[in-house]
Image 1 (tube, helix red, strand yellow):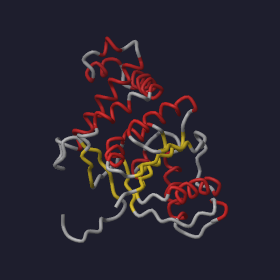
Image 2: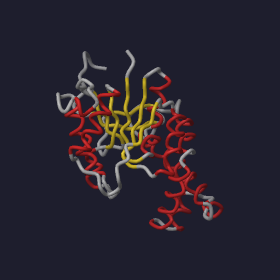
Image 3: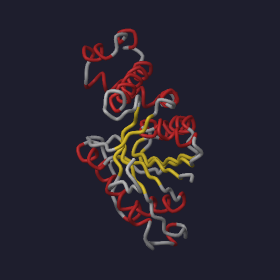
Image 4: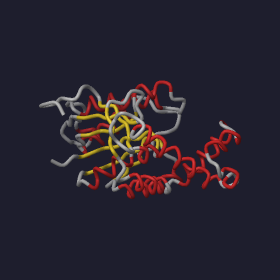
Length: 248
């Protein structure tokens, strides 16, 4: 049975952060979609290109405003309509525990908005205002980058594709390099990248090298360096216990 997957991202980079998993599902014939809550207009073509590289069928930009996310009725209407139109049986989104202490703006209220909208989408709430679609219950929710993962996906076969998608995000890569130079400093960055001095003046290439290095380290941490049995992996936390017909 094929799946319909929705990656609900607060920021566009998150699509690539779970890109190995999204690519695996796309290659398996599943319908994979993405929606981004917060995005700068100049970054949207790059996010769309990255998503297409992974096999994502559609990417929507929900056009919320930075610093103004709130779980109010108009915001819920927008997400409930999205859920009922796409009718995913699997939702991937940010981890509630991680969002509480993340200092990126809007993450905490975004998490409340997501879960409220998921709950409302399955009820007979404002049917006509949400496009007339029937209620839809999302059966499975997986939180990305969790504080306490309870499952991993082996992405060795799609890791190169994930990095290719990352290379589309020039705006994000440049921004990451700028932020890391300010917050971490040259001395520490030289310890991460042996060729840091060669890349220091080019924020795009520096950001690319940093993200490639960090992504591989994170995939190995959840893979070969863990007890998961995977080599390169992306970690998730499934909402609620798994229901099994027998032990795996």
